[in-house]
Length: 435
Image 1 (cartoon, helix red, strand yellow):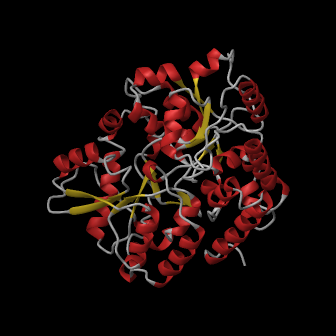
Image 2 (cartoon, rainbow, N blue to C red):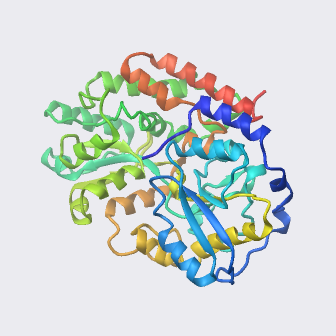
Image 3 (cartoon, rainbow, N blue to C red):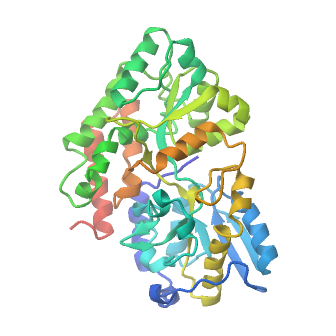
């Protein structure tokens, strides 16, 4: 499950990060002096700590085992309770830092962690040349400097659908645009099928419906314009997307329990055919994998990206996709942290993706056998995807919370847009991007 930091929390933590920075960290790891040791170089006596969330704490298991055996280093993975991002920011603001941590590698979240002060730049990382060129610079970079290492395929917003429900209702091809998606949904409703399932109670996925409608605008510079104040959430582009989402809900194209349904309910509804489609990201497929084996998923579940103009995805890398290395003031540990990343994406990479049964990001390393087709389709959408608000905006306001309030009937689309714009301005000003 994903957690997205609230605007109020980000403002509070940004202030703390500014006031309580570790002074020793500011004097180490100069970008121009970064060196990369051999991934398996001896590190006996060195102890490293990795912070992870509850849904990412098992991800490094195989890598840690291999790295410890190859180098003699000791690596401890520490689980930070949810809400993960807020927990880390609070700790860092008081000077408590790990050597590495899973972190959402987007511009807004690198800004929120005060990357320039707190994180090691990963300039000249030795694994970059091995990455698929479409992924090399897609995320992890802030103001021209790389701070995060992408280790798994970035999440993509798109439509997961039940193949059997489509077939039973004569749908032989997937929609080729957002308008076609709505047409298919209306046809399903007319046959007594629930077209879409939404999780209004857990709230965080509500924003996907707005963001996929903004994919074309994002590619045309929407978030650059919003970042610089040339355009606002209250202007037609974003407001129309919010209003259309509201209209689709009022037209009865979603589950009748939309206000109370939760994330867990979505997977059950889709697998059981109680709903035809779910607008979600990669973590949703993780839920499906916990409920069914690969053969069942390949038989029942498909995926397609969607945007107004066609099958364009919207990428939104989350904390389970990437790691950052902190400036701790200890040059030996900082170098060892970089070495662990080099091992992870170098000698340890094939074992890592095989252990996780996940898609390879490297052109020279094939995918493990048994990766579900839907997951392959999600990854295939990454390279041509548009950036999400989290990926391209300088701040991440409470759009999802406001949309959940709209679903609950306590906010109008106009109020959602206004509240989101006000929160965005607060965050962007606190980060020094707007005056």
